[in-house]
Length: 66
Image (cartoon, rainbow, N blue to C red; front, side, top):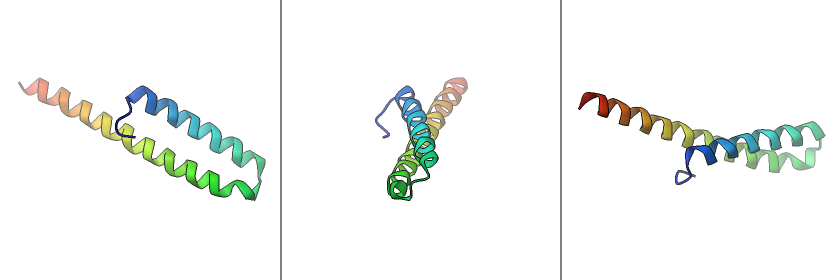
């Protein structure tokens, strides 16, 4: 996911959150595996967003110091 741009990652995060909420609302135990996979992907998107934000902050700090 690291290769995706920030806006795409944010859109994916919204999609994962909505899909998880909709699937949980069904209360169907048969979709728990799918929910677990979506939660894993959601965590990966959050990590990628955090990394991109950290890179942006580091770039701003480096620019301010030069």
